[in-house]
Length: 116
Length: 124
Length: 130
Image (cartoon, rainbow over all chains, first blue to last red; front, side, top):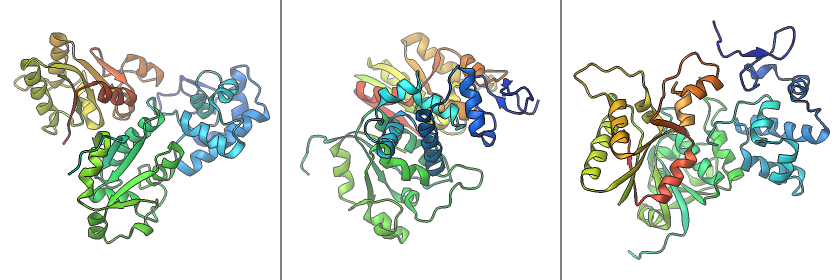
């Protein structure tokens, strides 16, 4: 098998491969539609509030070549969207559990390395 | 030499340039994690390590991830004290103001004073 | 004194890990306490259960494991450095859909935060690097 990492597929046509934690195997396949499908699997419909964070994370990755960990994510949100949103509690509400990991997964970014 | 109490948490010494090895990258990773845990981190670029701050580095070296974007990202982690030794700058033919980040230039004698200023030191 | 070691050299490639092991044995003999050995950079290769040196050479992974058995020294491996280099325990192998794993107890995959914690808690953190 060329890529034994493939765990399952997001779409019925079997074109978008996912790993066991629902991260895209091929980051280039990300589209807004893919993000919506990823969210839908968890029973979440992406609202504009989700989208502004997802977009911000993708821009962060464009610039720094790294998916934002929690601390820089909070700082970037505070800088760009204001102090009201730049708080971990706000991000926890939007992306429960581990916001940095969840945002990276929905934004089609690499899995944040475990220790960051 | 006067002995002063440590005034900052962690000093990470980086002695390797980009791409030749993973020392620079993995040294920076330790710095980011420390900052993420709320420690006050200073970086000291010594010897070849100064090359991490070369201006005009292309995004993504052949087959490797670049380190320049991490340097650019340090501010997002509130790592804002980057130290460079004047002897090394001279040796590499570089000027502090042409580097890709704002640095504090220290003399060779002040390197040891910086070691004293920090509660702990990692050397990469 | 409470010691911790940071090992950043691969076994059989560089002296660092071999010196670290001898240093570990020496400080314990002297009556000091060795809390933890933390493996980072190429040092993560020390944790490979698959290493198979010839019988007349020291088996580094097992030597570290014996240190743990005899003295309770924790053997911690940076997870990010380890995953890149193909050192995964069973749960990481599952997480990344791999068919095999190469790290087993007493070695533990852990975050770099643990290294910073060690530095805070130990009287001495001694680095062994190539």
